[in-house]
Image (cartoon, rainbow, N blue to C red; front, side, top):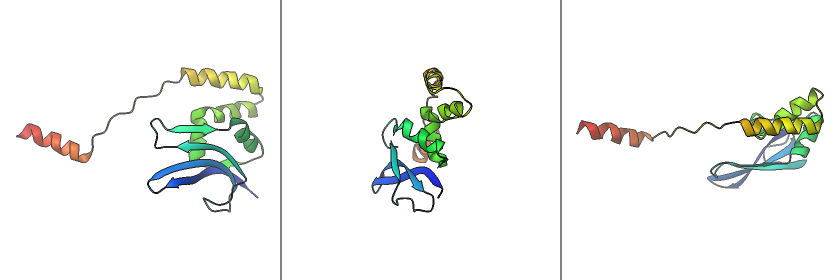
Length: 129
């Protein structure tokens, strides 16, 4: 049985929320999970990501493969960096300290505001008048 770490969709229509789960790769997206490992709410500003670090590291030790989205969430929270360091032989405490300093030093780029097509059309039409 191959285990994947992936998202399970929760919430209502047009209001998605996700749970990070360990699940048999043959099960469907919202099928029965082996374990729940965290939550992801993309609609909040900024997006809310709550992951159970120790549980995720344990599943990675067991050979579970994260989906691309879960891999990105783990990378943002530093879990993937910690996992890579621990695979190379760094102790857990030392890896945690290094990841904490990296996360503190990281500067998030401000998002560029992109006007809608309607707003762009209005701004182009206004100077011509």
